[in-house]
Each structure stands twice: as structure tokens, then as C-alpha cells.
Length: 208
Image (cartoon, rainbow, N blue to C red; front, side, top):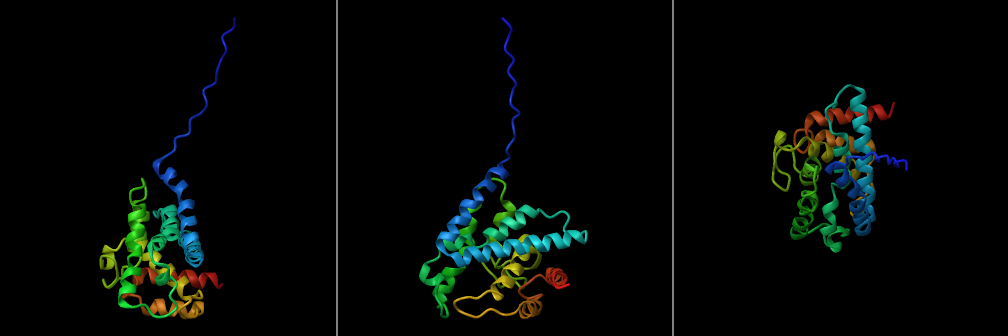
């Protein structure tokens, strides 16, 4: 009897990072269930991060950037808001100091949610530190200048830009020009001045 020949199927090696990224849609659905506005904002911030990266790489810059990590961190930067009380998250008026403190916990909550997944060090840093300020007056750790992870400094800019140019329950949106002018005023205080310069060039390129 002829021996039957079996072909061994080709095995695909799946990395820890790939496994983790397969879980990302579950996180985004969680945000959508909590608050559609936050979900839409996060998707816009991630898309803006992708466009900004594409522009910078076309100029032979940011070539060492982990693009996937940047876009994913931008997408998940507000994941911690699932742990914020609805009455605080959706409040139309000014927050009390206690409510402000509660809201500001979202960056640490988000970090705690994802930090133990494999291959997400850069992503978790972006989530945790996107509200740090260049002058050290941000949260949660009050990091200053280059001590703030680069990915978080970049997310801070696209996050602020989309927040200002989108309608919110507590204020009206502003034009892209007005938002950019505000970001430029905050260069060296809230934002990394070098990244503000890069972002300015990117936005001007979108208008040409």
C-alpha cells in the first residue's frame, strides 16, 4: 500500500503585539457604549495622528516612529473615561474642583486598563501622559518637557485640536485657524514647541 503523504500546514507565528491589537476593537466598543461623543472624538484624533505621521514621513522625518503605536494610543487615549461618572462626563456647566479631580483620573484609569497587555508600552505611555504639560503643570505625574514621552506630547496636540474644533456640551467649537492659533500660543507652556511647529506645517499642507 502506498504511504499517504500529508502536507504540514504552514504555521503563522503570531506575536504578543498582534494578539493585543486584536483586542483593540473591544476597547473601542467599550468607549462607544459609554459615550458616543468620546468614541467619535477618539477616532478623529487617531485619524489626524495618521495623517500627520504620513505628512512627516513624506518629508523624511519621524522615520523611526512606531506608527501603529501612535495611531493606537491616539485611538485609546480616552479609554479611561469609561470609569468616569456619567454626571461628570456629560455635565454641561463648569465642573467643581472635586469633579475636575475625578475627571482627571481618566488617564490613569486608562493606563491601568491596558498596561499589562504584551507589547503596549508605548501605547500605555501615550494613554497615561497625554495630559502632561511641557511646563510641568499637567497630570497625572506633573512630568516636564522631555520627561514626557514623545508619543504623549504628540497626542496632546491632536487631542486639543480636535477638542477645540468639535462641538461640546459646555462650549461651541472654533475654526481650525483659531484652534491652531491657540495651540501656537501654548507652545512652550502646554505643548512641545518643536511639535507645534511640525503640526503647524502639517495643517498648512492640508490647505494647499
